[in-house]
Length: 323
Image (cartoon, rainbow, N blue to C red):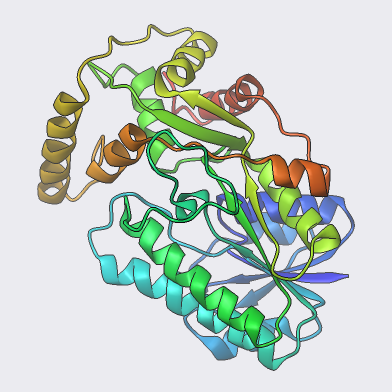
């Protein structure tokens, strides 16, 4: 079996490539000409140069493949240029699915996000939860619109299965909420705020993708979620593992003001904010997602929060990201 992976040079896509290789799949990765692919090539991965915004390059890369894993995306909770994110998530997904439909690719696994479940505050979301009707971030909106396109292609006869990872953590992770985690461990936050989050190990997410391809059904959706935690418990465990002191907690309204100020400074300094407004909004609203369908139907056994944090922090230390 041969699989094309879009986003294979990224965090989730890279873990997916590793798991596919471990399971003896032939792997081809669609990568832009500016992307570093030496590591992938050393593993025997075939590189097809192209871009998800160039449909013809996807069609060329898909030739001879039995399945497509579309994992390419821009994941961020602070987007200086919203049009870029919308174009990448929505138009890129349409291009990938259209290429698969034209080439009659037997199977597609689309990487969405657990954020699109849209559960209300205090509710635990499942694959059957009705969306709350408003978005907490531009990223949620972009992926929600891309999901509609995926369902449209399912209606046209394309075999599409969907994975919704929720708070992916682990080695290689430098995404928004984890940048906050690193800053907390390094003592850059004088005060924290309460919230709720859901998390899952990146290697478990990769395995859910492959099991969805092997065992799932067309149109089936799977939330990948290993644990639910308060922000305080999550950060306390991270600080314990890292041997650091947990900062005090205060009113969330103060954190919102800090987030706005961080974004103003980031625009002036042309850098990333320590805390974005969308990250604050997501954590205070809470993300509570149930990953039991994947466990029951696909047989995935999720790693614990402690195991996930241990792997992640060991990687941060190896890269000098944690003091």
